[in-house]
Image 1 (cartoon, rainbow, N blue to C red):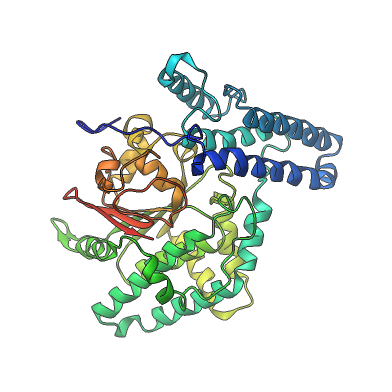
Image 2 (cartoon, rainbow, N blue to C red):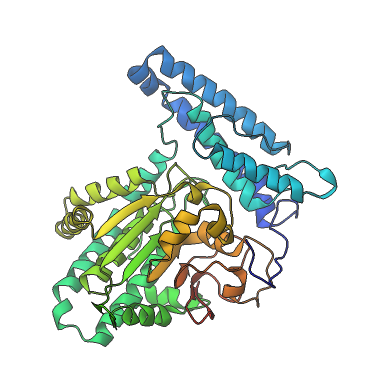
Length: 433
């Protein structure tokens, strides 16, 4: 779907030598595949203990599949259809046919000649195919080790942040509206900078949060390229206004990105929104399969809350207990949808995932976290830097929305790196780093 009168520029692609897309497909993606193969090999004994010879054979077959995939990538072979008959397989294969129709001179869809967004998503889906095709390994998360390590290596920063949150909650009754606003803006920035902890960008290398997330904010302030956070605050406050049926309680949807420290920053922000009365309901949206190395799945989400509850630290544990309570009473809820792990630009959502688009229309504010969500919001295309954010959305506007993104990939418009916000008056805004 494309907004009337808006023509889109070319997709970013590895075809453009020297671009970040080219370096990703040439270097980063093969490195990630190699790490996945190594992870499966290192877990060989565990597969044997749990599943016997069947587990060992599944490991061997999956490694062989992934080794062929790596060769296909590095030699720019044509893209293959999925054969695992999963829920989303036909949607993927239909998208490939759609891409083939767009190729010039009948060239096949291939790793270096097709849109980077599509090919990068495709690699992660093929990793999942290797597991789907080799039960009993089909539920194994090849990225779990890295996500777990990232969480534990960020412990000091998590303790600091949870302590700060509990102090805010303790003093909340005595806060003026200005103090409440300042606290919100600070937590929004912390959530933004949490997006630096991205294992897909570091190709799985340690990228945890070592320094205090609060103390570092003043030094990071100068790196924010576009900051529309005050408009986000105004939107939340406006959502509290009385409607025809009386008091309206805001619903905030958070489209998650990375597990580990970034997820903690998102949970802390969500806790503050509820505790301060700025939101009545928080809906978290994550991935239904392991994705882009460190993206949040339901298992990651639940594991993080349980680990925080079990921490040997008063305020970490208190935060985890509160988050568990929010989930139990329905104030918080976790949702996934196959659309989040399809290669589509978000302007396709109203047609290709009408149920999800309709759900998002019920939100008072949608926060999109991270680089991949930003790429999908803007179509991962070669936009001029002066193009307004709302124009790059090409009609995607189910509700007031804001993108919190630390700049990694090439795509960038007038509102960069961090918070891009679009509100009902159709003005494009950003809070960018």
